[in-house]
Image 1 (cartoon, helix red, strand yellow):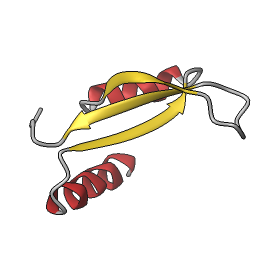
Image 2 (cartoon, helix red, strand yellow):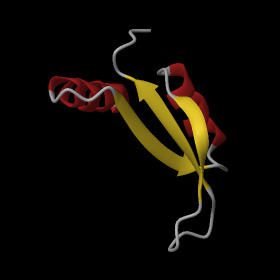
Image 3 (tube, rainbow, N blue to C red):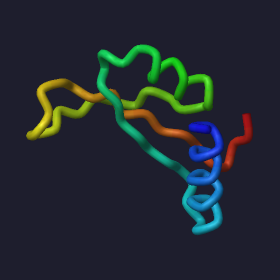
Image 4 (cartoon, rainbow, N blue to C red):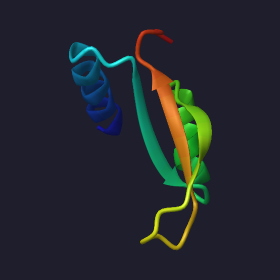
Length: 67
């Protein structure tokens, strides 16, 4: 189910002419980082949000490149 949702979001973004899509998740959520990596997202940095007690991993995917 999650893959269908992500595919839909990526398609909508591409339809609007976007080249990249970014997301973030807790750096402690190794299973999510691995999942997004398998979907073609690459680790591009970290973010510490003011209202979160954890650091986030920021990931990005080139929507113009099909995997």
